[in-house]
Image 1 (cartoon, rainbow, N blue to C red):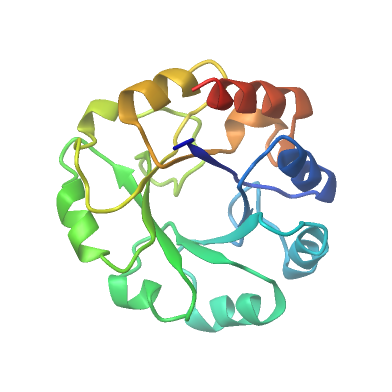
Image 2: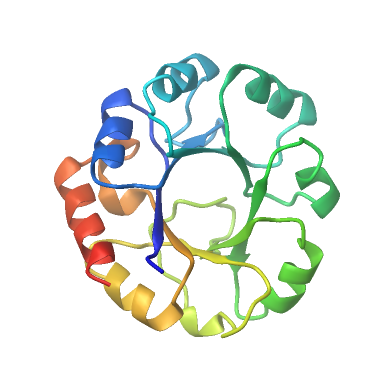
Length: 205
């Protein structure tokens, strides 16, 4: 089975269309104000209106108020919610949408326990832990910290680029990979050449 690809932090229609043209299975929209890849609801609607069938739209939230998440869901066609903060399993499951739970991995992180706690999640997204930063750090974590067997599909994130994604796929065998900064020209602005190179490395495995 081929590895799925999510390109996250999309802020422009042209970047979304480029991602889709290169074969991305999903695009990610960041609804988190402090992020340099944050999008407004109106911009998100503009982007989503251009996304064709069979490409999933993922909405990323970090410790957001339920009222804000519900407002976004009511206005933007989101297929999956991604929770990147300290949300409880109950909070994640409260929106009648499939969800992904992001885990920022540290040496003492018990991923088996995380998979058990978030048993309702469609996948665990494993990202790099950096103090005070919710994600999108551009740094790789130690993939050896990932157990060989987890009860949830693994989406591997954190510092992936065209230079290391093939090795990541060989070592981790994830269900999917998630890239943001690794295919950017500047924060929030994707680079079509980098996206092409990244997808070529994924498809070669």
